[in-house]
Amino acid sequence: MKYLLFFILLLPSATYAQVATIKEIKFKADSAYYNVDDTTIIYPVIVLKNSTIAKLINAEIRDELGFESNVNLKAAIKERLDEGLTDISYKVTFNKNGLLSLTVYTEESQGHIVTNYDYFNFDLRSGNKITINDIIDSSKINSFTSKVFRSKVAFLEEYKKIGLNKDLQKKIIDSADYNSIIGQVGANCVNSIQLTDFSLEKNNLQIIDPCYINMAMRAVAPEYELKYTYQSIYSFLNPAFRQRLK
Image (tube, rainbow, N blue to C red; front, side, top):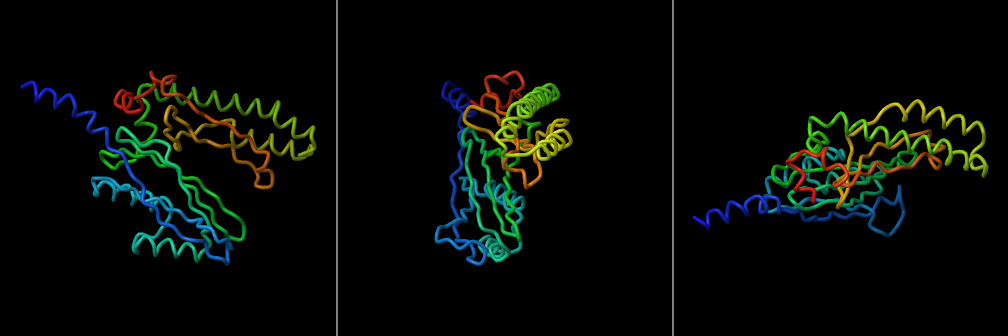
């Protein structure tokens, strides 16, 4: 009987213990778009002991990144190379306790450079995507959203009062640029918060909700991190995830 009890006690930790390994598919960019000798395409393929779950996760990543599903993956990547794809890179930010979080960066040449970040969070037990509504307790999601929104507004107010004024004083921007940026921040950023994109990190939950402004002024766009330690938001976390995010 004591051996059965010991097995039951070990079962949750064994369930959470699954971690992913990454197999990389590598290519060089088409020289017509990006003429370098280095490998710039590094596509991550998730490998798990459970191949069925791995297949689900890889299908989700492939679909989100926009690669054709009716041909093999290498052929699909080559098709995109012919269309101007020049870069793929990735970063795994969390990979333990049956949870995987990774960020994939892509860059394409389409007359101008188009860059994009995709944020993926998966439960390795099921292959399902994890949303912020899974991580945060349903009874606390509104108060958590308000907390993040207040942080974002505080960063943007500091940017307008200090960062942007410094750029104006240093003549990095002129008064017309200043007024345009203030208008864009007010119209596009300061009145809303999105929790759709996020990353799980070793000790933190990071919400990704950047403030986009005109491409010509992107160099002076506001930069901020909406990052919260798991300990600081412990009361907001779904109890099912509290142990898994340690």
